[in-house]
Image (tube, rainbow, N blue to C red; front, side, top):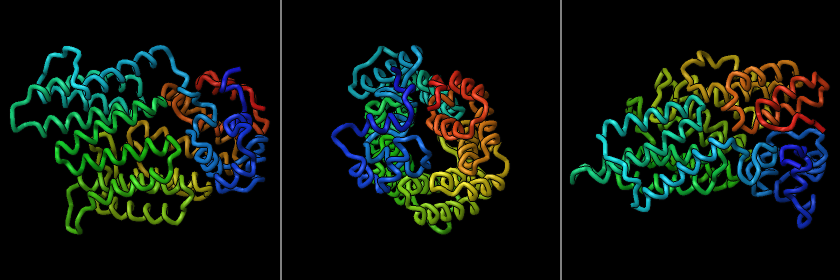
Length: 400
């Protein structure tokens, strides 16, 4: 029986195993025993509780929800991409190489930027294939730079390794993600670039978050923005965008921890930075500004169990065209979940199907679609919707 064919409740039981009682899991997760029983009985548990349970089970929430097995179910091309990316990361870090001819620093930087563009659109497999090439080319270029130019080469290496870690994290290749972000950190330190060191710290926090290491995620997220806090008179949009995004991500981590007050406080700080900027700015794989903050506010409200507030925030997001495609897609998943939590089942499934149908390659790397579909299943709506979703996501449509 495939892992995705089990219900969420059955997967929780399996992950809990015979060595842990429901009472022990409840205590570790900080929820009631009744909540554990509801979760294992597939009787409807909110996302905040599921996040706490996954952290207590020391597993990625996507594993618990059936979107990922010990290694996420992947197409053959995806597995080949990950192997190539792994070789590129480990070989270049070890100083052994694939005989790549050095190209100019400008060409390498352009290649890394192109890979980031694909990542932001949600084309993770394509981004990974480009990142493997970019890592090798960046390493070859770094080996050929004249004395005194090492820091500029290290900057490009930082960006290439960080992208490799992001792609690996999306595919559940956690060991590769940790290795790549470690190499990115070493290169950022070599470049003496505080902004990139902050970006790397934020990336490590995201890996911790996906690995259910919430305490480390929170600590690292805080460190990522405190190290680059701008002065009162700073008006550089590049600096403000990077700082504001890191504060916003720290708010996301706090929300996942269940610390609503901390999440709201950080979100207020991010809004203040966005107001100083006046518009959204895209920089090095991230985007930040008023629209970005409000889009993240939707997800934060959903993950802290406030669907009405999430939908209210969505109504005031503004022009979402300024967001990268992947961010727009994630926003709509958050909206679909808020609608489901509000028992607006038809609207929830319509929103979910729209984003998954338009962006299937992106959707199958996300855990939320399965959460929303299984929650909406209790509404007894048309089974044809679930079959369509199952075909897109590559999961079982059997809802039990």
